Image 1: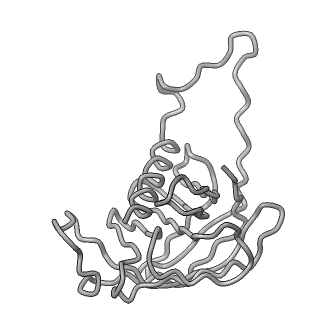
Image 2: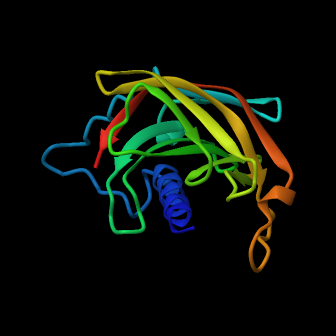
Length: 194
């Protein structure tokens, strides 16, 4: 449960940070001697696309000002409860996003079959995630290329629709409605290390 909570908090922080208004009072003002800093040129070649119960979602790696953004980061082990993982996340807007957490010290080309843990999707504001033991949920992630800091691959699987509001007490994952994730593909996603 703790890795899922950490992942959700990280994804929420990422969404919040990337959706902040660059003209707000919390933004750093430009230096009066140097003038405004040039805007960084984002790598816009990457994308994530997948179907949620047959409905296509495409997230292009544009920039935070346009809502769409994608990131892969290596999150190192913080304590005994948080393993080292690679987090591939994409945000389309406040109602649609995707996050895949692959627990590994090294991300290699190959297949990762995720049965539970830090993997979720938000579609039209509704959260679905890999359920716990006995849920029947899984996500098959295939890293087909990892070169020059860019990863590409594909994925598909089944998640459990999380009740809103969440019930008090344990969740019977096997009884929840299922969300099918099909035809998932990601291409040229930059992987950063922390």
